[in-house]
Image 1: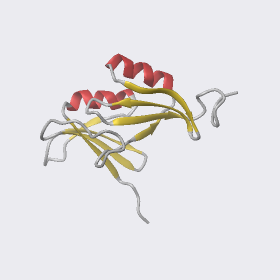
Image 2: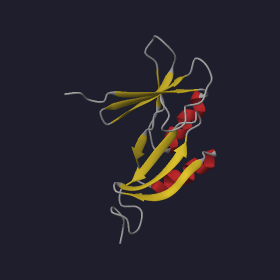
Image 3: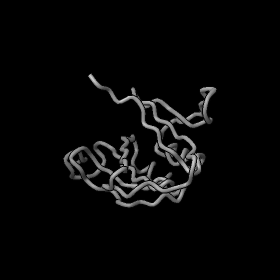
Length: 131
């Protein structure tokens, strides 16, 4: 059986990118393995998530372009996360939208990655929505 073990994102400004993911509720802490750079990391269930400093500046490729990634997260309060991301100036690419798995927004992290943020049972009238 194959399991997903880690997701590492490289950041032009590690502190800024870590702040973005902390706004999603990811409890990132500084981590140092003794080799390589200090980075921000957290375990999300069985998946180790880390934000490493990029060796060269750049932007993530556009969604649905070869080489692009599209991370998605579930949160307990989409409204709280949306407000926290607004305080950081994170671009909202798609506001609240009903999906079969709940309600979501699409936002852009500081390195240009599109990120899906979901909450089950949030959007009224949707498949997972409230009455």
